[in-house]
Image (cartoon, rainbow, N blue to C red; front, side, top):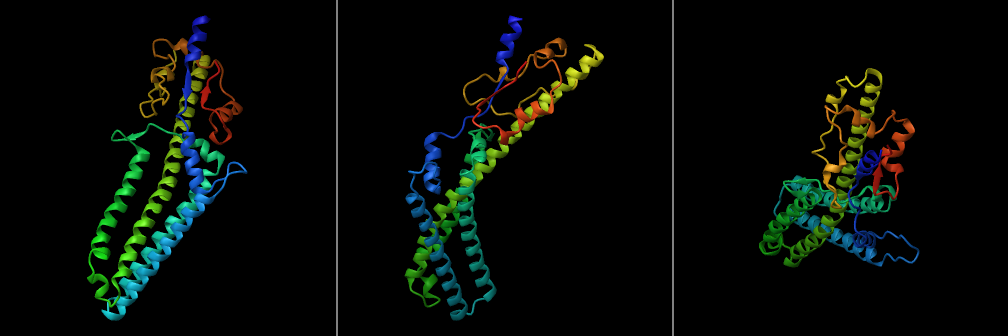
Length: 294
């Protein structure tokens, strides 16, 4: 009995760590999330104002140059409309990302599911890969825009405009790009982390249901049942524990040659209430460790 209790204590599923406190506070101040009555939104107001001002300057200078090009050089009006429309769409998308990030990070349910998962792409954290992709896209675009709008004075001279207009467009584009990367990255990180958290919960639910089915199978047909061979015990796609726990202890001691050890997981089928309590993520609050009662 003592051996079984020691084995039961080892069967613990640890979720990945939550965001550090300093990171949550930084994001909260940047988005204007008030956790306490004494919190201020000055930093968030400044950042949001700079985002809107840079977006307005970017759209205004783009539209002004497009109209001048269509009038002076008789460029295609369709090209001017498309260029201005894409600029407006990019600005609106980033502003929407900022508002969406505020809603996501101010929700306690979503914030609880945002965790530092160890899921990687080519040995690189998936959230960092997302940030690297969007940053690379913006950086390449800004380098190209610099050669056209800031370094080349003929871009505005050909349409009869002052060079300062093109330079203002590039400066506003550079400023707005920084905010666009930040707001969109915040949203992307939340979505990736929440999807990963729920995926891991669903996988644990499937594995526990399989163990429960094997218990029923053994109770009905005896130890000679072959249901143990159909269990999904491999967890190669799961995250490694972020707090240094050996991943081997996350799996129960079950093997085809020792079906009797299945009773150390649970000795009777689970009820709907037990399943809801264990695996409904939105109902779990402030729990970093989920244990399985044996």
